[in-house]
Image 1 (tube, rainbow, N blue to C red):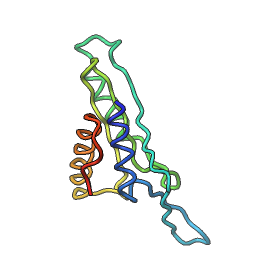
Image 2 (image 1 turned 45 degrees about the vertical axis):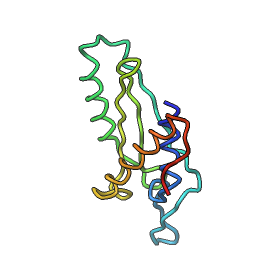
Image 3 (image 1 turned 60 degrees about the vertical axis):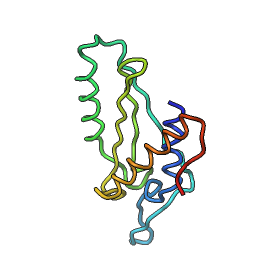
Image 4 (image 1 turned 135 degrees about the vertical axis):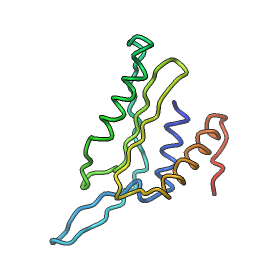
Length: 129
């Protein structure tokens, strides 16, 4: 979990879009980029549920999270939730507003968080330039 949290924070530090929110000043749109690179990781344990109900509940929670609206004036416009099904079985739910991601950037983010996670899990520094 610590390696995942670290990889999400490193990802946010690498990409301004993940720290961006939108507002207005004098009636004009304004893009705000936070210096704070922390991307919170919410954690939900489903281990108290019967084993056969856990995946369905994880799916329900993921869909619920995807439907929850973002407030564009408050960042981050990305949310991460780790659902624990068993001690070593998890589901990562990563939801981003389309204003800060698209299909191409999602592929980059998945590739980078995977590389960061693998390195941090082994106690190694980021392999990314």
